[in-house]
Image (cartoon, rainbow, N blue to C red; front, side, top):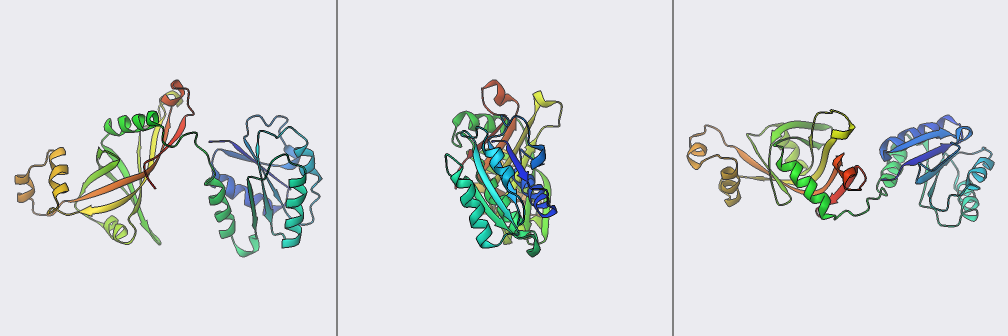
Length: 278
């Protein structure tokens, strides 16, 4: 992921905007234009936040630095369409390459436009290779070395985080559960998030895995149920004598983001993504 620097013009509305968007984007910082760092070498992306009635000469000053290897974005805050188009045109004329990102938000309408702009910019976060088998190997080894995760389910105003044991097999997680509120969430929304992590013991031992997936509930009469029960050491006899039903949750993983210090020894960034499927 690339570090992002947000530069804003000093107004309260622009500050609110960059505060929120930088939080959504992650790996970022925001500063008023009078505090532009002497060196921008730590940042791959520079995003300007401007509002009406502001002297935009400071943008020109920043653009006079060598930004040829950097992605540039601009966010208009509470600007009318005409003024917004003018500032975009002004910046484009001073650049050697096209703008990575543009957004115009209106704080007077609340924060939803800001949030959506942050989500769009966050979606542009690039990982060198989202299908790197080396990354998959590291993820699978980590999953097989652990057996407990946090399963997050949600729908509308209801969210649930459940510590639960799992079995990993070929891009899928399987979990036994007696049920609960998480099932209400799953019936309404099968999209889930799962986290597996080690306790923090210093950066050199950093290990935390976040995954997204689609969940389906497997009942005892399905063939897959018996296979997963066997992997968990649960016999048919034990299942038959149980007073309650144990359901199986099957989560087909779509993406995983692994924050692992071990990647540094492989010459990779500490944060890697693997995309299982769309």
